[in-house]
Image (cartoon, rainbow, N blue to C red; front, side, top):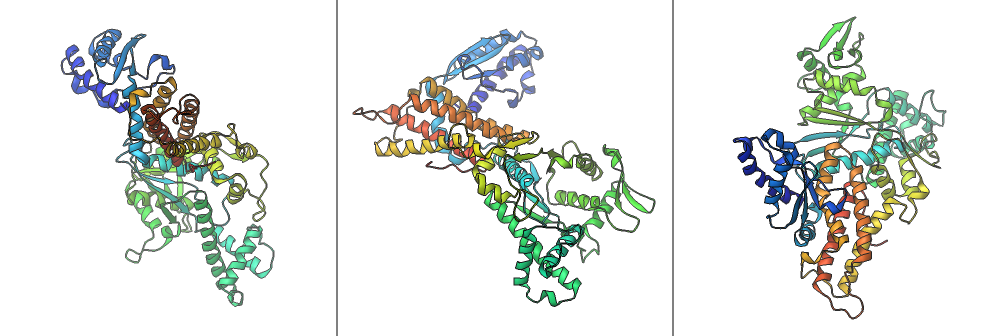
Length: 555
């Protein structure tokens, strides 16, 4: 019996009892009103509900008396061993071994789909993260957002949402000219221009550009600059994509800022021109001091924003507006922005932009601000000179250890990683602890096959050891944990959960044998435990996948 099964049974019992206390009340009740929680003390049962306390006043009855009625009816439900009332009206439920153990087969049969749910169904989300300028390699700050953004996308999709993970390429503006000038100077053997980009990677880009365009230095300066800028940009963007792919991060959309500036031949307008007119139609644009403004103070911004200066040049805010509107035009009602710790000033600005565009700033846009991450002993990049590169971190710490350690903490908590700890093959290293638990389930599976233990029989009532009860209780929680991680945008809940499952599995492994000892024959208890072993491995595997980490078969 799954938590959903138990919740549905409780709801079905609730309706006639509520109607008995107050006629017509059953029509007001909703299935989601019945919430089950795991008691902190497993001696209190497998599940607990406070539904009687929530509804008693509405029904004009005493909470404990109503809980007693519900518990008496629930005790007769097949699979429920006991239903008892505690305190002012809690209902503690204990499942019989067969009902609890049946979950192992459910999980194995569901496979990779176990944990998936529909809590976010019907929601179309655009999730933008990383979006580093294509003028250099990705660094440690981008690394945290790459891990968190990708994991958030995974849990949202697992919860039924339609999600487009998006990288906004800032490939327009003065930084691209500076980048191109830096590369061209390196190609000519000249010093880096004032305010330009230093680092060996610029020289390497220049070398690659010369291979592609061997005659570029013979061209007039402006032509050579344009070629150097474009070729180096494309090369650097490919490197960024490769770095992210090796980090197990893949974007659904790579959105170029240039698209916003390009003129539509049919309308003669750019997306930015169109955005200004659309905001004006909403009534939030005004002209003052030869400039065009958006009245963002109407939506909580600290000041109104200039969208076009007196010289007719658009501000960065104009591109932000056009980009925001493009997300709506592509069918995304909800937009999530993941921004670094130095972007707090963007929160009010983006919320105000949503309001000016006619959206609801409280429901249609979400801005997550992450805190800084540092790595003990990390060295600056030899190529870039002033940053710690993502590629160097992966080579040093390992992709799995780096992704897992970044995913297991809330985004708003400052984080310092200890590489020596993350490289340890010990239980003190969380990623090793979880991956080892998975590898152990696979080892048990292989050894069981060699010993003639298969899953030809499943007798869930035999899974009655206290460590089995505890492990099954945790496995039941996985769909709820996934839904909660999606709702709160907190993938660290997945990591902490599978660490708990790993601990319970190791304790079960120490107490309950899947493979008979000595000459003991293979029995149904061994076959049934193999189902539980494989179910646990599946849940750990599914959880690791949601945080973008591999589940090795051997370690």
